[in-house]
Amino acid sequence: VWQRRYWEHLIRNDNDFARHVDYIHYNPVKHGHVTRPKDWPYSTIHEYLKQGLLEHNWADGYDEKTGFGEA
Image 1 (cartoon, rainbow, N blue to C red):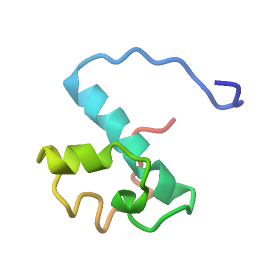
Image 2 (image 1 turned 135 degrees about the horizontal axis):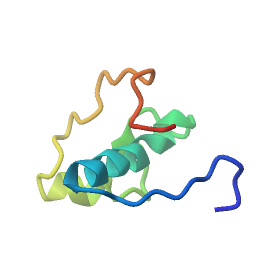
Image 3 (image 1 turned 180 degrees about the vertical axis):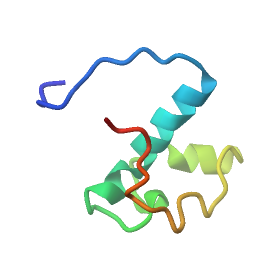
């Protein structure tokens, strides 16, 4: 909240929500903490994978230049 690049955003629909969840799941990779999102032990991605909401190869081969909607 106290970061310079913080902005408020109202989630508009299910697709918008999914895009933000993807961004959150990929953040540990983006910042160099892990090489795959599922390697971050504190992530909700584990619950998403367990429930079948994401495939286990989610974000494999992801091109960081395309982004997950970060402005």
